[in-house]
Length: 331
Image (cartoon, rainbow, N blue to C red; front, side):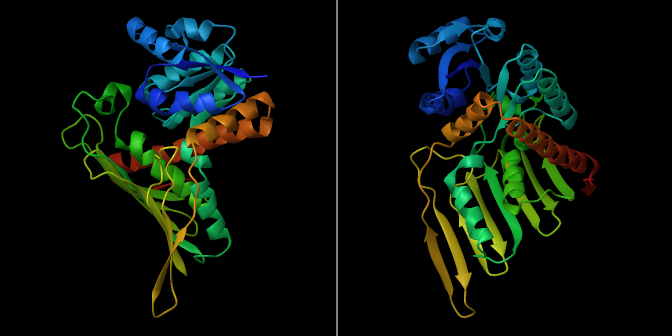
């Protein structure tokens, strides 16, 4: 059996990563694509061999099991709840939405309708991070104390949707969210307090930011923005060593990501290159979701929902901290 997939919107990420990834997943079958622009939908449909719909007709199709939504963050709740309300499973690109309350509404809607809701943080399953977790577990760096994550880009064109306040753009929702996700994953804890600075620099949304996340036994220092030399990396500093990535969040499927393990015996430093295979992290993420849906894996579905709320809770605390210029504790 295969899950039949519809794509809600002709976003660049769908063409560059999502469509090729779905084509690699044996239990998924891409069927249709929707756009508000009929000509654009027809062009994409012809290019990728997909049936053409508008948003409403795609959601209404009874032969579609799963909808993948790469819509702007400010539209995810509106269209996502329509998808969930008709009993279709939903994959949303990160960030899944713009506030904790919105995330709660989406999760509640999924639970009421007995369907899976997934926030597509694709680094979750890349073997790079699995290997780094193994190194930490094996004691290669001793107890980890500090996670440092950077993710930023040079300025985008002025009309880019990331600058639109009505679509809930901004650097935190678009780039900073990755650093938060990875800090939580690698430290294997949830933060207990956050301090965050966000700056708009004349725009309607934040275009740069930094944060300190306090964990029970570690801290995370995060920086992100739309006005930077491109950076896409993190490091983990422990009592006996340091793990440093060369590319962490956005990775082409053919790239073998560079990872270094740095140790010091007291007199000289040693740098070991950690072998990590290339992987299509989108395909791995989609395969995880599709397997959970096909197997009606209640535990996996509950985990997806809990992860959405945990991530949204931290981002909400960061927004409050930046707005009120204060440290915010998370209960």
